Image (cartoon, rainbow, N blue to C red):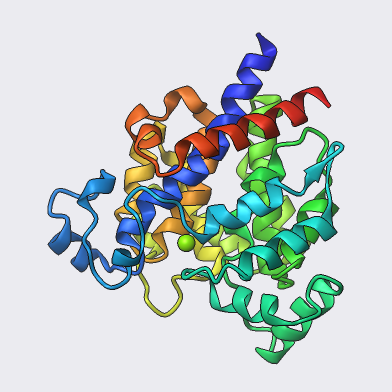
Length: 312
Ligand SMILES: [Mg+2]
């Protein structure tokens, strides 16, 4: 019985990630005005996707780079822990497939020829080239799986983020999201705002205001559609925390985040990974899973990973 609940929450997290990512592509890079124009009733189904330049490259219902990179991490789990070098190799192998939707900072980091041998150094060099300002959401977008093994250490969560994103705001975002998921799955417990703030202050003072913003009930205050800063890690963390604090169920949280636009696939990927861990796989409407592209392959990978976490 206990294992059934753990399995339901872990699968909820991993399917939440992919479903949020896949549906979020439908409003990615759109403003709220554009969403009202293209989806007058709101976006809730993969079939509704408009076929503009951005979306026509993808299959409706397919997940994007966020879940691709999460799977690179998942495939790096062996003998009860994440193998950092293997994850770096998986990132590089994925990069070589020429993914159309890769983030700019991630692209720059993975471009280095010696990336696999020196990932932390290379990521740091690239960050410094951008005057240490870049704090994109490329770390948090893939961190959900890192929260699933029972005895995960903060150091492991940090290192997996640092493989591409060394900024403390990125690392703090990953630790907060992964810890929330770990507590939901293994302790069936919601972390309090105070606990989340305690983690935040270990990393960067700028995180706290986004936690406060997410505590308010109004998702619009997060201004997720802001075109200049939609890819900021703390904006994505804000969306995830908003869903965690306020969504009454999986689907309402998914639709609320997706219909705010901006970096919607990433925002919904992590928000829904958390909601899946909170409410369980059984809370995700079957439509979103059955109509997800490559769902049979996904099921196998998810089940294999959960078996490794539960039985090894
Ligand atoms: Mg994406």
